[in-house]
Image (cartoon, rainbow, N blue to C red):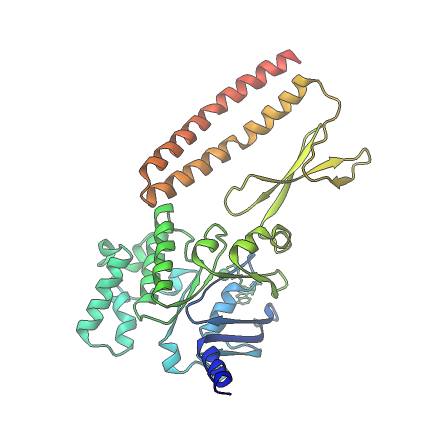
Length: 367
Ligand SMILES: Nc1ncnc2c1ncn2[C@@H]1O[C@H](COP(=O)(O)OP(=O)(O)OP(=O)(O)O)[C@@H](O)[C@H]1O
Ligand SMILES: [Mg+2]
């Protein structure tokens, strides 16, 4: 009996958020969420993905108490929030808005960072220490005396994140935190999230950046275009579930048709050049899926090469960009050698544009 009691007590104690069957529609009847349920344990890092308009930001507003669900219920730290968040809960939860303009309203970055701690009633020394720590943590010391409205988009995002962290919340809600950040800042952001996770914070991140969900979270929820949860699981399993991601319109498949063969690419936010399936074109024009097989119609070898050159040239620039992107990431994580090699690969790839054109011209003459 004691063991059962202990188990119930312990499992409840860990459950920091309990979202039960919530729905929300904006004025005018625009539905944003429909029957969404999930729980979050203390110390979890959850990512929420979904297309534009699927309801991610609305969900974060509901969790932060800015909106009230029209039906369903949200419990935070075990307390019902139907009548709004108590001041105690409010001081333990913080939201980074998708648009940092919505967050910043004071005359200087320093004032912004002091505002939250001031509201908590901390003494002057503690407020100053908090603001200084945040400036250092986010490497934004140089912005300290600037007006928040004069900052670049990425700088503003960092300051807005700073204001969230300045109250030292237990639950951190982040809406598109990496949008507008340069590659180095993105890597730093991933490191920061993991530091916050280690220190026991509970983090919920809405993002389109499918490239980071495995790095920053242990669970991912996919919201479908019907504003309901479409899928929930480990981020790496979600990323592998191409069919569900296609259904949620989070990736797209584009089909390259050539006169002699066609194939499909799945595209994530970043360029992902994975061949997921190859298709057979029937004489009638209908497409029959035939994984792993290319159908080559009657063409001469030189015609096939011409088509291949077209295809290679079409994707060359995108490939070069991807190599550069990863070179930046390698540099940001301190791996100078890998950065240099990837840069060389990118430079050599760019040079191939001319070679492809030359080869196509020669192939044309030889046809
Ligand atoms: N203030 C509002 N008034 C009316 N409808 C709104 C309002 N804010 C959002 N909506 C609608 O609610 C739905 C959900 O919007 P929400 O901003 O939550 O989506 P999202 O998943 O965050 O999208 P994005 O990826 O573009 O940020 C959308 O159809 C949107 O048009
Ligand atoms: Mg949004």
